[in-house]
Image 1 (cartoon, rainbow, N blue to C red):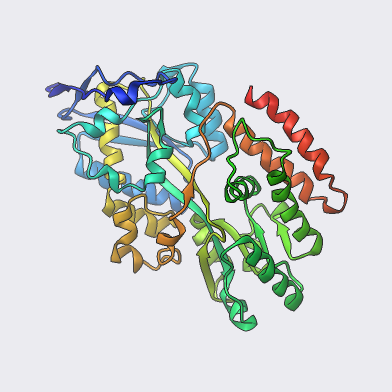
Image 2: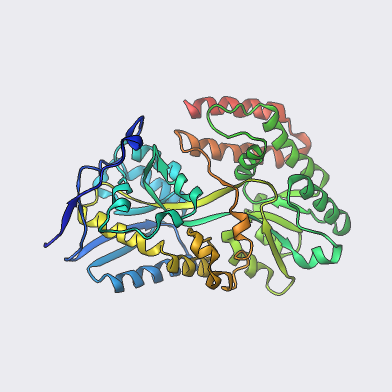
Length: 419
């Protein structure tokens, strides 16, 4: 194979100082800068239905433009199954795919074990040329780094927004709430007028960490879950459930169903649920969407990671694929078809995206102003999930809930998770 190579650009001394993770040592390896012979790469993902169709369409377009690269998509059914597959397979690196979708906290241990490729030298490579990496939203870029090194490429991203029944709001003379106090006020008015809960949060663990963020606290190993701020987060939701103006998703799993059936006036859920909202509502009422009703919103969705077990040619092929699907043009296409938000500011600001018919396009600039990410540390994924479990147990039985006891139990569980 005729392949042009050059030594990868070294990371600055500043990036290397104090690193606790190993990652894949890409700074001293030869990087393939031109693919001149056929290369096959595999991509594990968890996109289904129309999302998978859109991903396949992007992949086919890439292969048409890059005839020497074959990308095989391998659907792992769900995020849960994908995470389990990655966890089970890292013990045998030769069986890993070339690249995968993953949440950053899934990859903490594989990165620490040197199983994931540091993409920094590829992005900095003058020959491979990544088109304006700084155009990717800063919060997405930071979430894909560990110890200053770029391991993930942001792809299918979302944040939470407020979905509301605009027809109902117009009828009652209501304005979408912009903070937690207003959310209570508007929810009570809906409940009093229509006898249905005014609002709810799709994700209880996201609600919890976001509430803490608005209180100036970060949910990490040093945070005391029995603190005043933690109790305030739980009691805020608990009081609403007790009085009837709030509800949880419960057995409905997501609130888009009750919303479409007009049994809840508004709810906080992912912007990526736009297609489900539209399908559930149909022509029953006009749907409105507004930014998350507080000064912080969790950035969600997966990044794409390249495993270090891939050959040099496969790594470059995977990198070229990442460049393609995160380009401004393709991010507009992906966002318009799927409801995910573009990862590039230029795509968000483009007239093409704003006029794409997406409900969230007009509010996305405001909705992404105060994005945050949960810390990527050992135990973070388990701790985050446990927060949702604790809240579910409290809110599912509101009249018998002992918040103090539940939070003490939560603290005890976290002690073992964070260790």
